Image (tube, rainbow, N blue to C red; front, side):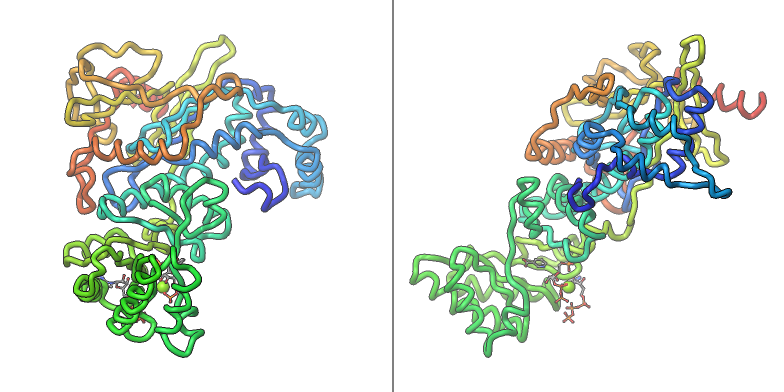
Length: 487
Ligand SMILES: Nc1ncnc2c1ncn2[C@@H]1O[C@H](COP(=O)(O)OP(=O)(O)OP(=O)(O)O)[C@@H](O)[C@H]1O
Ligand SMILES: O=P(O)(O)OC[C@H]1O[C@H](OP(=O)(O)OP(=O)(O)O)[C@H](O)[C@@H]1O
Ligand SMILES: O=C(O)c1cccnc1
Ligand SMILES: [Mg+2]
């Protein structure tokens, strides 16, 4: 969050309808009724087989600061309805002013690989509070998860290379840029060119120079020499302003001068043309001149598919600068995460399951108080089971494919397992320590290593098994049938 950019608290960072519903809950005496909401997505982004959860630490900061300031309240008091009368009455605004976040939150740790229908976050508390938080929680988690996933895909293509995020200039505004830099780092990038992200998030910052530097001198060689003279410990020279091969030769001349002075040529950068051909040629020329350790950086509208293709063409690129297509999550600009009511406590203090019906099976929500249990063996993750915490999971549980009930699988639950949703807040108080960003970053790589190769591939990936525990599936089916009028 870059609060100071807006100089305000962020509790109004929500859709108006959350506030009008909150008002309705309050007026009808339901404000404090206990509810459970789940945040989940229905389909992996980019046609992939996995998604990397990200954004929880921002959500935690947001929730810790939750509350309406005097200015927020004053503004809400100015909102009017179609009759030009105030939308909200004074007593409600007073209620909001005194509102203290007091929900329980469970969530899956940042950096965990996650799958459709699994609650990334579950919130339990007064329905008014849960409702207000729908939009900000989705805003915080959808985009970061999307970018961390995109970055992880690029890391899979280039496991041993350096990945630099260059996206700030093309990002969706300042917050998009900041958020993308952080999520890209978690997803597997090594550094960013975004200096504010470096300062605020402790991410390494790195960079080369632009064409304008070369163009501001009479000759390319002079521009390289000048750069190397003043920044001898940061010399990666952009060689494609005029003629790439000649540029490489000029870089070598400067590299030799640097060596005389006790430094070295760190790298050259290619930013146009056939990056496979040019990197192979550049590598030959550099090696022949004794610059085997000089890196070859490539940039120019890269994404995981072009990177993959370049690798297959034998490109000699060992540093990748990726901007636009990473930070804008090309070619899927949003993760379709949703936030749905799953249970509500009645006057008798009993939980009632809730479900949102849809013609499309994929869009029918799952009721209950859910947990995700991940089973693994020595080779990695085997399957995930979504179950209701109020039901016993027997040793030989049956999992049902949420999209096709004919696909049921008896499952030996003696595998090692872990319940992924961990307590984050209890009655509004944080009870979870946010891991260091480096640990979260490492977690992503470890998690990816636990997935079957087929789940990681880009083209028609293998579907990782995620099932509803049979008891939960039966509850869901019974509820759907009841709502459809006893079909
Ligand atoms: N060998 C290659 N295989 C596949 N894609 C490549 C290869 N070389 C470069 N690309 C990609 O192809 C696209 C080339 O973009 P474009 O047609 O704009 O050419 P350019 O080299 O940038 O042109 P310009 O010389 O005007 O800068 C970029 O996305 C780049 O990453
Ligand atoms: O291509 P991206 O993945 O977004 O990476 C960042 C780009 O930003 C810079 O130049 P810019 O695109 O601003 O100018 P250019 O037209 O000279 O490439 C850099 O040279 C890269 O090309
Ligand atoms: O440092 C670089 O080379 C860089 C930074 C931002 C965008 N493009 C390139
Ligand atoms: Mg460009």
